[in-house]
Length: 330
Length: 305
Image (cartoon, rainbow over all chains, first blue to last red; front, side):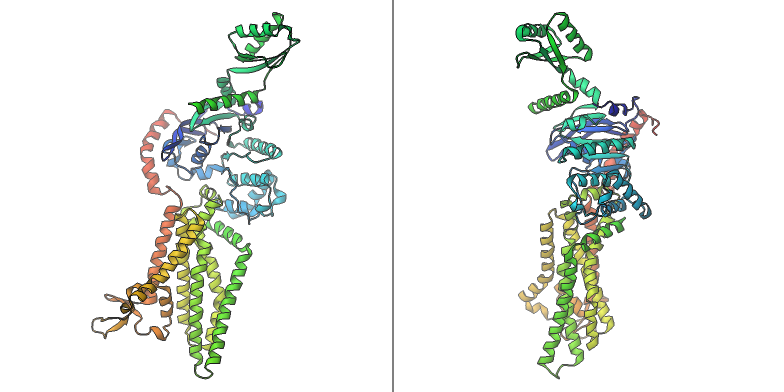
């Protein structure tokens, strides 16, 4: 978890930029979304996480006004969306999970077309296109046909397209899928730059780790239900409860004794001993609780060599898998 | 806004080599037919035919061939206009823009038409060959040109309508061609099945009985286009009479074509954006507006930069 991303979240409870209120979407008999309530703060990078088919794309498409919810409302800046026709087209830039390109156009022509249909005056277009190509580092590919671009470049071009009318809100649906690690890093940098430019970014993924490192807020969806939502720290705390700690002992003489001791403590669950001198334990509570367990182990005279909590991202991933598994069983 | 759409369509189109080859092939075909006709007449009857009848014969051939080419080339450009964007996954992006349904449909229509119009324009030099022989007045030629353009617009809007209503491009293209074939062939089929209806005489009050073609030929492009200059075969009567109003075939045809074109375009505009019609939005927003009123009172507008 990056603290820089967290600090961007406003501390005061000001009105959210987007408020999703009791939104449901039904297709015939299936419920794609079920009574979703979400507040998306201004300037946040909001991650929508869930396995495939959880309803992320449906929610994105509702926010992009490509779908109308079966019930419920979406509010932008305290205005109900359906009372303000055209507001979404002006304020939202949408990048779907497919490219949607015209292969026979050049990058610049492609952007010019979208600038045109977004009603940007002709004399302003050239400047905007140059700025955007520079932002996504495609200036050298200005006059290259779109079909000759690599996947990562196409992705960046599509991002530039979504920005052509300088939207306040950016919807990125699975932006990292199919990108190589380097392109992913570049994308992440780009998203951060955009946040610094004052955009509110909603980004979806089925891979939690992709988002955990760049999002300020996350929401986890499962089968059309919102499982949990909020600031990354809050979510981890709420879900978290437990952290896995690896305790390595000096030798195997007191291993069973140590395990017995750990099992007695109420905050410790699931003690396992797979390797000779390595004990894994799930410990409930915050850093203070971990600290206390370590102090007690040492004062009791157990030969602890190392005491290592697993890193945050991995923990969140585990929680995510755990939750979505539970959801599947229900 | 829709100019941007038009420019994009033209760029996409002109960048494909087949557009140029289509024009070249089209002109060559027309030219070849014309040349064959002239050489045929020359060898068959050395002094029998007058220059004027050669001219009008050539004109008839060129006109009918051109009509068929328009009928069958235009759908290739418009029958996948909307669902083609859907298949290329660019349609959502058009919906996310400020492009209105009307601009979208009209832009697509014009883009598809420009090809057909380009073909018509490119064929004008070949048609001017007819004036070399005589037999057709410029006004008659202008009438035929008008009919060609109207037919092209009609076929283009039929193609767009199909591409709006049918999801798959291949299917919508097939349906468009089927409809055109039916439109052309059904009256002929009726004429073959019931030949007696062909010789229907109509007595208009006071006048001598005149021969009127059966009503099912009322909206047929070939009849109409021949009627613009009345070659020998169709001279008996060139009027449909509706009470006090009597219109020539080609006038009736033009009116019917314009009306159906408008209907197709309206259907396309209405259907292209699902549920975006103003009526629908109003119906949906009514129960909500009350709710939103109470909500905005609960949360007084806090200062937002």
